[in-house]
Length: 465
Image (tube, rainbow, N blue to C red; front, side, top):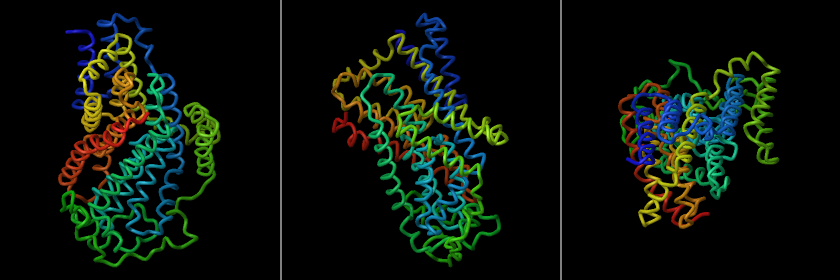
């Protein structure tokens, strides 16, 4: 067996173990980098660490630290409830509010699972109370997170753009961002139409911005239906036709229309105001002055931490260390693959298929299938470098191919086997979880089967970049 093939098989084993044994893929990748680098590639420690992504490490730590502070001091709560107030409680707009909110959170630097973890419990509570399909609401939250997930200052965007730069491939940060935004927006529109969204227009408005309605306060036909309100009884096409939908009950008084009502009781305190200013400053610094996102974020986080140290102590523990470990481990292993020539070998093998467009669509499907069961960022970190030599031939546009791979690897995160899908499943109150699990699994399967081919047709075939 050739060393190159062995290193690829080890990477496959890493993905399998991480998926089946719930071991952090980054930790496994570090061990694999040590074993393969030392025993197969004859590298010393310096050679193994040559691929460690120090710049991405700072981005991950800095941005997630700042966002953890925002979560700890109540800024994210304020944003959530203010967004619901903005639509004055109109039921049909609530899924779109959740889509936009998670998109905004990931676009300004939140890790996708963090944004979903914050918004999903509120979104699914609305779904249970007001007859909205949980599949519809969960899909809107996840696709919203992915819609904003590739902004130039986001975690995913920073990772992919960093990989593209490291591999010396042509890149376009704006094209990557817009590709993900438009793809997820289109998918969300289809889900909204299919899963009962049009019926929500008949339901009037919800009371105040009661993002987290108290137990026992549900209306007849609401969340006490144990899955029948808003979709527990339906499949993909009937998920919005439960007994709680269709305007069959009187909507609560729209107290959210009161101009003097606070955002669901979340005060606009000094720490919240300061954090909002810092988030705006991060966007301006990175987009307007081309400053490093990681260093800027960690500087702003240090300023907030110095003024409010009690919040800082809690926030440090909420930095996305598992994600940091995952990304750094996988990219370190990819560095070992690069050192031993595996990337060139694999790229030549894909290119050797003889039909570049066929090779491109196969890579998109590989990314989608693996990501449905494992880490999206992990598979992107592996596939983009593996596609580098193939893209260097110039027969396939690199910008479009990278965008297609990124979209294919992330839109499938609604699968219940992925972190985001699991968060949605766990956050849904008063539903038949086995039925909801099957709905998410079926929907995830449809996305895996359809989306890679569509994004290949739209982004790769025209030859972007």
